[in-house]
Image 1 (cartoon, rainbow, N blue to C red):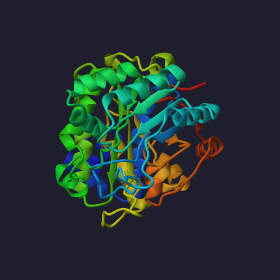
Image 2 (spheres, rainbow, N blue to C red; image 1 turned 90 degrees about the vertical axis):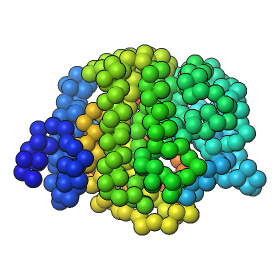
Image 3 (cartoon, rainbow, N blue to C red; image 1 turned 90 degrees about the horizontal axis):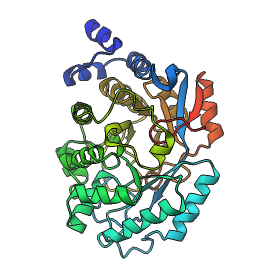
Image 4 (cartoon, helix red, strand yellow; image 1 turned 180 degrees about the vertical axis):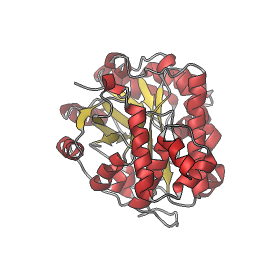
Length: 384
């Protein structure tokens, strides 16, 4: 174990078997190793000031519909088409939400929805074009891989064509939603009608080739094993490695202008996974009967994620599910980003998790740890 501890401290790559050994360490030790790996990862960022800065973003989570036909057991948000509270957003409604976001200094909307069986491709293209024309400074970080797999089935078109057309209409980047655990045994248990692991990764690979940055996620603490969590990390790391090998992600990915990024015009040579975000299963009002895990386990997995994902620069704290105090502690367990103030959040709140934070709260939490708080965009360029 001493050799493994030194190897980890030095920043060397660890294997799946070694990750399992690290997982068994006392949380204090694992957290210290993750913090060291965070310092190594961010040392050259922001003109060499990466270890002095903790970033955050201002965006809004807009769920364009809650109608969904995949009925995930862990989700309390979805509704059938005939449900009394089923909805599809209008352009006027989304305009109001974006105007409120801009008024608070926001630069992005995170737009995701249920798998609506009847919305056609033109509906989505019209929505994206409307946002781009009405709010040209807003980045649309939208549509998870599982949604794109759904689109492929509904539109009866290749993924390459759908992602290209969405990008041209105004999509700027793709979130990692629907990642859950990238192991099909788990996915078959919790969301059997949703995209499987290879399909999720296929969407990400195509997006990277087409010049779209994406994020990667993990929702854990339900029916998966620790070994399967590590397998999930391995699949994410391998996909990032393949993108690097193809020349998709250069060493200096933070050197490009915010204008290029916000316009969704980043060349394919500069796009891959920008960040990794993990959170725990939130059980209230869901159909999934599984033991949940607490803050201790969350911090342990986030720390392990920082160590294992040695080719993803940014690890984001999930204060939305853990609360602001644990969100702050996560910044000493490998995270370099506090996430977004989340002006609106509808999915995990339906599962019983309701935490709120504004910019002043975020700045205070970051300053309390003697870091400089800085707002950033989706590509981890500093704002202002």
